[in-house]
Image (tube, rainbow, N blue to C red; front, side, top):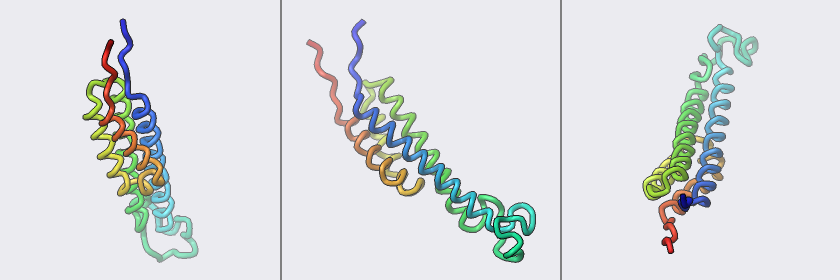
Amino acid sequence: MPETERPTAAFVLSLIGGVFILLGGALMTMIGSFLGSFGYGMMRGYGVWGGMMRYGNPGYGMMGGLGYGFGFLGITGLILGVIVIISALMLIRKPQEHSTWGVLIVIFSMLSIFGSAMGGLGIGLILGVIGGVLAIAWKPKPSS
């Protein structure tokens, strides 16, 4: 049984890009959780600055103050990273559908600039776009 040719370079770059986007989303979620803890938390006065700023700006865990915005961006980044990783895995499993998976990788890598520490610290965005474009442009060698 002959082994089918696969877009390996596109897969590797897209997968690494997706991992960076996922890590950027995790970083943003942790920042959001930390910033949310500066408010009251669920118990009055028990945030990070609970005793010093007892009647300060109330926040509730990740959903308080700035924590809400960072938490939302982080969760968005996590979702986008997972989509890029799944698309990269599908690219290597179904190379005949390389254009479809490449387009999905490019779109969700570009969207990651809004969701996860500027596209996985910029590295995930760049690697994901390059990998997606390589997947779109990939052509299997004609069998001889």
